Every structure is written in structure tokens, then in C-alpha cells.
Length: 99
Image 1 (cartoon, helix red, strand yellow):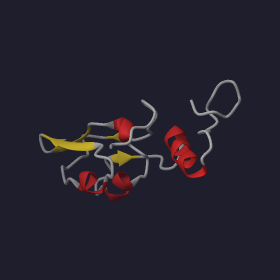
Image 2: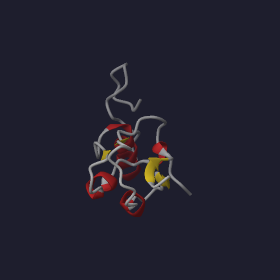
Image 3: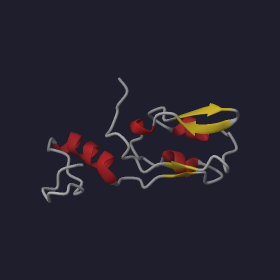
Image 4: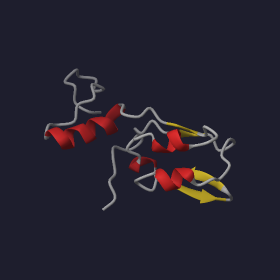
């Protein structure tokens, strides 16, 4: 089963102009976020990004950026380990709940 996180909250960004199509992002991404089209990587499933940062750390041309371990995706992962409700502090009502 492929994990999905909250829609449109991943911090991953990609600069296609810098991409050389080396496929390293595909090799290191544990959730299949990337694919290659016309010899360039592209993000095909942003909502599956767990913000681990492996793609950005391994990209030889710095075409990827991820704020690893931040945001709602990190809150969800931490909640899995702790058994508590996700809390990233981004809710407007101040209860600390996630989004």
C-alpha cells in the first residue's frame, strides 16, 4: 500500500531547468514521487512525499529542495510512532492540531 499524506502540504520543490535526468531521485525516493519524461525528472505524486530529503541530498545539480522533517507530513509520521494525534501547530484555533 502506498502511503499518502495531507494534500498539498509537502515542502518539496523542483527546478526542471537544472535537471539532467540522472534518475538519482527515482533511485532514492522511497515513495515513487518522481518519474522521468523527456529525459527530465518530474514530480508525479507530491502527496506521497514524506519529506525525508533523500532526493535533494542526492541530486548532483541541486534541482530539488525539501525542508526535511517540517510541516504536517512530519507531524503525521511522529503521530504514528507516538500513537497521539498529529500536531504541527499550524491550526488557526491554537489547539496545535495538524492543518
